[in-house]
Image (cartoon, rainbow, N blue to C red; front, side, top):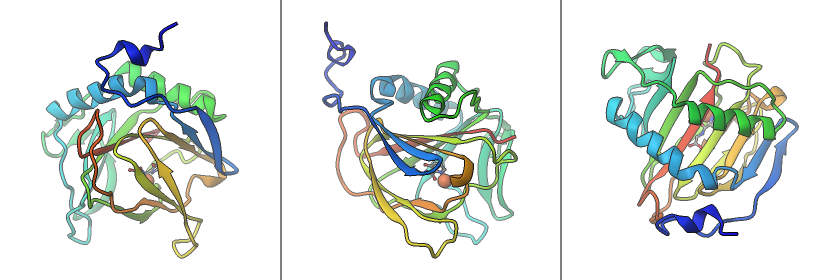
Length: 221
Ligand code: MD6
Ligand code: FE
């Protein structure tokens, strides 16, 4: 039986073995869980970026973020001089964010279930684009109204070092390598853990070029 991957144009890397690594009581890495769905996810990103382009948002402190971002879903995460929030409207286009493709929503529900969070239905998906040198400093995801829902985070393209910290910014963090197709799910007692992404290294990936994408599916409202 031919693996689905070998039916493609040969752009994908060889399949990696699936597996689950625990990061905390309610946080796991699902290795390669998105690998066979990566082309679908990247096609979805393309369609979303055509309508709501990737952009470098300004932090409340006035710094331009090195990671470019956009969103799909009923609400999108935005940063500007007034703070961080979810908004139904994309401030760049002054219209609603593109709808979340049903196949992407279903994928996030399946990943959450695999990690032990049954019934997760995201209403927002933040799309992050990293070029070499882009980084995300330690932060908590706390702008969502419903902190009982988990977050499903998908890595595509170039590998990155994910920094997984504790409940206080000063707690030491562990370095977690995340590769194309890896999915991190966390919620429950780990929902407010500090985390970030180390400065992205150089490289090229057969499906994305010199770029890493990260999608985080959330229940924002
Ligand atoms: C990234 N991810 O991996 C950034 N936040 O590019 C996040 O900031 C993140 O992966 C909440 C939950 C999962 C995440
Ligand atoms: Fe985050």
